[in-house]
Image (cartoon, rainbow, N blue to C red):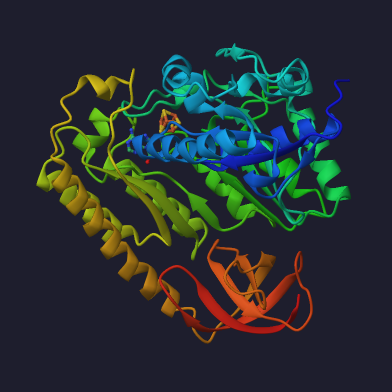
Length: 441
Ligand code: 5AD
Ligand code: SF4
């Protein structure tokens, strides 16, 4: 075992839940080799920046952060490492532009980090790979940020090649984790007292156990039987793989939350076709109807892209009308940005920036009003909340999520982190609910 005793490291994460989970893996691997995690980059001898390439904006954020690290390095010395998607994809460009970066490591090689760090800080290994079978040994151990809710990766990579998306190029083809290994991890998490698990993968609905052929719904059924877990969630689903069988399994389950993130991307069938999403507006609406018929009150969220090449005003209006018709509890919305190597990058990025900006603002403004209305409907109701921690803004305020994944803030005399509590909702904004603690579940 490589020895990193005495070394302190800090990890900065950009990007999605997948990246957050990868950072937990990196932290666990370094800690297992003897290194200690710092809470600020100023306290670390090594800073690992875990990057994301999914949108142009994430890349801009990375370069500005690297600028800050560079000035610190000049004065105080620092080893700078890049991990994650951008790192893997733009390694040559990054090293040419940022000679201060000491090493780069792609998502498939995190297990080699202790080795990189112990074999002389200053070398620049560039390691990347893409297609590969699942390797369970490389995925241990995690140093989880939360002691209440745990991410559990069930698959990685993506075979869908949506026209705008860089993920299949950065994360490679779909690789499924054996069900046996997932269930082992779940048993460990149950022993450690976790209350909630969130299954992770780029396209969890396409899950298929490489050993037995068990499907996503079989995984849901098996996890439903683990008595310690109270809530089970998963992200991300793909509308074209979201079957009636999965919806029915969710409905029958005692623990799978009545909540689903189902990226729509656009409300226009024409745009969806150009995006190569594999479903129409009607297909999506039909899935929503089915979900709501088997799980009335299910809380839905989505991703929206505005300004995809060729998006007309009329096509954009179809996205607006879909938001109106579906009334999502939450959305993540983005301006289209071309990503190198993708099919859409070859199309003319012809929606002017100002138009993209206006459309994004319109989407966000409408959604904000819808969310406020949905939240107002909670006022006066007492809801069950899993307390996940303290509010970042106020030490006295506890924060958690309800089954629908809404943020719920409340005050409590005693520490209720990790507990299910009842909160009577008194007030709300577009992004959270506030209420009074009424007792533990
Ligand atoms: N431009 C804008 N948004 C994008 N996304 C992915 N690729 C792009 C891109 N090139 C968004 C999609 C996806 C989310 C993770 O990021 O909405 O669901
Ligand atoms: Fe990207 Fe599409 Fe795969 Fe999602 S399903 S990761 S948007 S290619």
